[in-house]
Length: 354
Ligand SMILES: NC(=O)c1ccc[n+]([C@@H]2O[C@H](COP(=O)([O-])OP(=O)(O)OC[C@H]3O[C@@H](n4cnc5c(N)ncnc54)[C@H](O)[C@@H]3O)[C@@H](O)[C@H]2O)c1
Image (cartoon, rainbow, N blue to C red; front, top):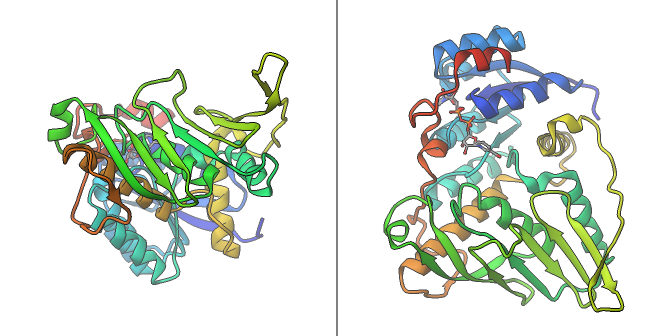
């Protein structure tokens, strides 16, 4: 840990933004220096709650007056792009957004490019890929502890393949240490295929991975809901928790689960938001690898866009990267527009007290 204190701006301080503000207020090397929040009552409430006086209605006025080191952008997804680009142009050293990154591929490209071209670290927020135990399992795989991977699968990729489904895709790419190079998909129901959002869309299909593995994708619970990767005698199974590890077979041919103790980590009260933020800070300080990056969020969007369009166009195999960057897939209204605009506003009393 470096000895300087990073001044952090929270952009969008609703339900999840307040979780970020709590975490950044707790770590000894970060402070919440400023908040931009569109809802004036909520802005006043979170300012008081986190002891922050530099309060703004939008990111532009914040950046005119303040020079934060880091910006945690936790507005609804629709507003991520403008905030990321404004922060990168203003000289912020690192930005994070949450999920999903955007709706349109070209928007995600612009966001990643705005940061890359200026040497700004772009971190990917509160995703399970950043979970300490998921990262540890990935290091074990990388070290060869389970032998050479020969298979992978994705389970229950449905309901919202971009909004929530970017969790499976991000973990898959990490555990398999591979990119998805081709997608072929079947989707239902027809209303969801015809619509613009990922709401209710269920996808079955196949992801072809760099390295040659063909990864089946199941829309249903099998009863698993996450990602499996396996070698000849081992299995690593992420099911929205610390991965289960299996090596070898018992007398009946069943897999044997290892009694693996994952390493404990500090500030675990914030769960994988902590491991995500700590890797973000370390990347800003030392250039180390991010546990979840803006690039990872972009890849997740692209895979969801490819699956939706493959299914819609008659299960055509689509190679990635997609050539047509105007393709889009919107998340459900809560993620795109936020609680205030979609009928689920956070009450001010909750914003005040947590
Ligand atoms: N990683 C996860 O597990 C996870 C969980 C929940 C939400 N999310 C994502 O986090 C984002 C926010 O979700 P939430 O639950 O906090 O929603 P929310 O509606 O509770 O909060 C969003 C806040 O942003 C503010 N806002 C809207 N536009 C703004 C703007 N242009 N500038 C400044 N503030 C603005 C709103 O007033 C609101 O307070 C969404 O993109 C959502 O998909 C991710």
